[in-house]
Image 1 (cartoon, rainbow, N blue to C red):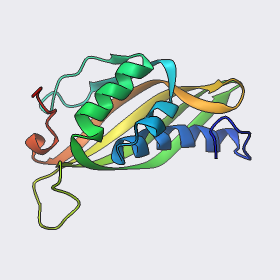
Image 2 (image 1 turned 180 degrees about the vertical axis):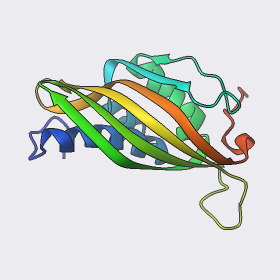
Image 3 (image 1 turned 90 degrees about the horizontal axis):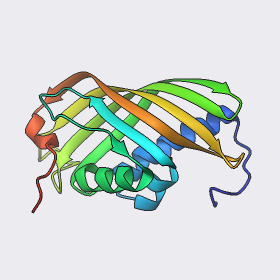
Image 4 (image 1 turned 60 degrees about the horizontal axis):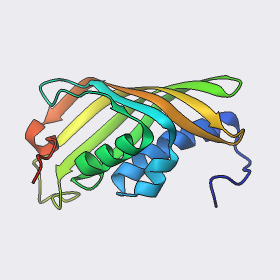
Length: 163
């Protein structure tokens, strides 16, 4: 189904779908799906991540957000993200969502497999502002990721350096 088609989603369903498109786009290296999650002027802020893992400046604008997430996580690692404890507040065509995000990270081609135990497991919190695009599809305008806990080897989730 095309995202611009009318759906039977409730606002909550559409809001959760936007954040699900974000994490699935990363996990499956699907740039189109990832792009569909964001507004053109989106901000993706990883400033709340534990600085022992990496210090981040916000990614600004959909194209930078998508390009950077794909280069550093989507195609650079084997990942799996799961959302839980989702809370949504809708106010007309704007909304906020908070949730927990569990992210499992392996170096490329080293997961998922019991053979590779070098990993980084992160427990994060998303604080997300969304807007309804053209009265239909919900998209992320601003997303802040904050660390709550981590287990494993930070090097397994290290941001790849330029080649």
